[in-house]
Image: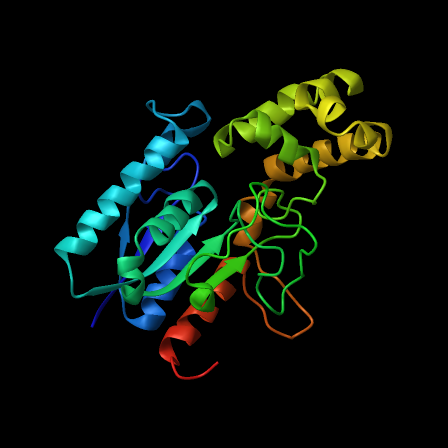
Length: 267
């Protein structure tokens, strides 16, 4: 059985790039399970105004199409599907829309998934609950072999349930590439203007009256965390935890997936 670690990277990428957050995880995992790696340039370079045109949904469809064509052309290949941040969309879409390939997917790993479920994270690392993905929650159609890791202060996989950044996502037509930019823009508005533009006054008047000021502060904190590296650098820095293990979030995700694949009959 041939094994390949298939990678969908995040914002500002076009295949494998220098400084990738996902690359160390992919390399470590491939070495541990004896696999090759393949990076799919799905159009992430068009996000946040970088690169060419196309929407996030269009780019995702192109990435899924390329992966499906590659899988059909290599029927002897089994894959581990890995993604980071915005690249989680083509990964989720592939799993959801093409169940005929599920038997050839050994595992799926998600770093900073905008759809991370509230109860899925790396055991032994800080539990981000009750926070979950800024775009909602998706367990995938293969939850028994799907793995997530999330830095608790990263607002993309670990937004508070009532975080204003979720409302920003709603006004961005679900396009994660615009969420942070729009959050910065809207954060400059006065409280009432911000609440009106986000639709909180209209949709959640009680929420506007109660606790809105605190959520404005949380929105500013989310933007600061994103811009300061909690969404990127923090996944590659050493983490010391009560279980006595060391290694980065990315390393530990690779190790968990490798153990699952190398011990298929054990829990």
